[in-house]
Length: 224
Image (tube, rainbow, N blue to C red):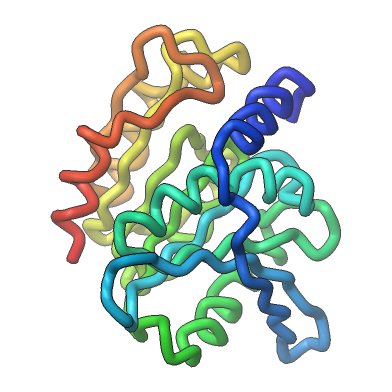
């Protein structure tokens, strides 16, 4: 992740009050490794249990970058979801073997009394959007859907069938990583893999952009 992206993310973090009110959970996995997870719980929305969203951070998903994307976790929690934001155990994002840890993290978290059992929503920003797509393709029946804002498929050979999984995909019109140029073929590939895709370019958007909740919230409302 470039310094330009990081500056935007940290600006969002410090402009929004209250973002550091997350609880921490250390999930110890069967292989002895552990994953640190920050949790946001809904406020003023009853006593739960609530459905779970796993928010995949951009870059290498280390703790600095994870904290920089608390703004999105805070927003989703205000809309009735428990938000779990995992920190990469080796600063190497959540692709490949690290990505395979996420279902185990979900299994652990759904044993907590405030979190509903069953399906989970995956949300990802930048690298996180790409890893969310990869993770969901392995077992799409376990997820409500994927929100990739933005995201791409980085390794087409390992992407499986999506089996009608809803995917909300947005990429900035002026994405300086040129992911915008990949949108038509990406939408075609996801559709051919069986996903139900809502994909658009964000007008004047760069790699990091403001989410249009007038578009995303109605899409979220269809999932449950």
